[in-house]
Structure formats: C-alpha cells, structure tokens
Amino acid sequence: MGEQARRNSDVDWDGFDARSYLEHNYRTLRGDDRRFMEAMRDYFASSSLPSDAVGIDVGSGTNLYPALAMLPFVRELILLDYSAQNVDWLERQVHHFEESWDPFWETLCENRTYASIPDPRAALRQVATVVRGDIFSFRPDRLYDVGTMFFVAESISNSREEFQVAVDRFLAALRPGAPFAAAFMENSLGYTVGGTEFPAVKITEEDVDGALSLAAEGLNVRSEPAGGHGAALRPGYDGMILAVGRKKL
Image 1 (cartoon, rainbow, N blue to C red):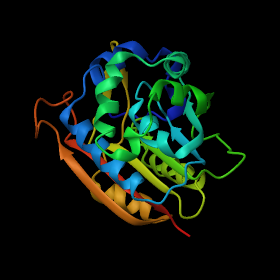
Image 2: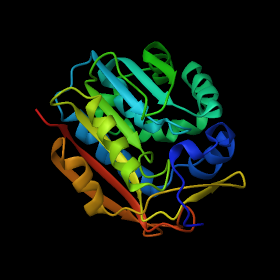
Image 3: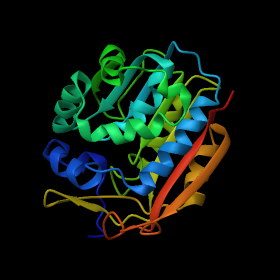
Image 4: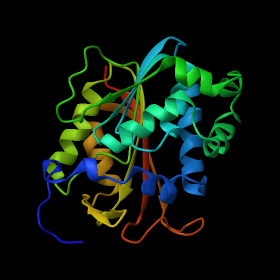
C-alpha cells in the first residue's frame, strides 16, 4: 500500500465491491467476530436500554451484526452508509436478510434478551431504514439512544485527523448516557476489495481509547490478535479492537 495521503474524498466509494467484501469478511461467522458479538450483546443487554430506543449504525457496509445487536431495544434503527453498492445491499437485506446471517443471530440469542424475538427478519424489516450519507456531512435531526460503528473511522482514509473527526461525529450523534459499541482494525495498512485498494489509518488500542475518551465514559477497550484464534482475515493488520462505553453526560 502506498504512503501517499488519501483522504476520504479522494476515494471512489461507489466503486466499492459490496459483494466481494461480504464474501471475504462475513459469509461465515469468524471466531473474532463471534467474540465481539458476545461482548457487545452482553453489554447492550445489561445497559438498561428501553425497548423503544432509536438507534444508529454508522457505516454499515455489508455487516449486519451491529444492527442485529441493537434489534431488541429499538423502535427505529438508521443504517447509514455512503457507498451506492452498500446501500443497495442493505436495502435488500432489510427486506429479508440472507440465511448466512442466521449463525450470527443464533450467537446473539445465547442471551435471552435476543431469544425473545421470534422473527428477527420481520423485526429488522419493521424498524430499519437505510440512509445514504457519510459521517462527515451527516447531521442527525435527533440524538440517538444507542449506536454502533464497526470498522469505519480507521478505514475510510489514511488521515489521522479524519479518523478523529469520524469518531467525534459518531459520538456527537448520541444522546448523553447512550451506550455504544465501536470496532476498529489495529495497525491496518489498508485493504483490497475486488482488486481495488482502499486506505486506512494505523491505530492501536491506546489510540482508540484516546479518541473516544474525549466524549465517552466507562470505556472498555479490548483486542483480538490477527490469527490468534484461526486464520487472519487478510494481510496487513495486527488485530481487531472493540470498544464499548457510554456518551458522557
């Protein structure tokens, strides 16, 4: 991957190959994603969220599990993404998500809060709305009660400044006290999707803690090493980082 500066606006996001990304990253449930889901699931279930919250998933891409993790608690759920291909894919999945997501839902259902939903496809269809937009220009018309942002802030440019702005905008969309979960690739050198290279910012657990602690409290930051429990997802990263916490009051 080249070291030249690539800001978010320099990237052709409509050329992002959603199907290729899905097949490589989420066609099967990996152990690291499972452990992140378990941690996020149990955190949300213990956060005293009402069943009528309004939630947001920033930069959903072709990853449904953050949205599914908010499903028991929301009456409305915004799935925000900028790529045209991602938006098209999300709209189809909201209507009726593919069977490959069933193992993800089954993992969530190991907590009885999730097992109480008899039909997750109908539940997602009822509450979810796909919105095309990017984190830099998104101006929410309300503050959200719960939120997720998975593998976004560090994976949309190689600018450390834009990484911090993306984190700040995500937290700014949450009401004070709102629980959230955010995930990041650790020390990513960038990534290739469908033959096209995309930029990333090299960050560590300390960087994530520092970026979030400006507007969050009760942070718990953990990591999963690349290849620590099976094959690495791809070359060029050290692991995956998960942070859960609440927007500062």
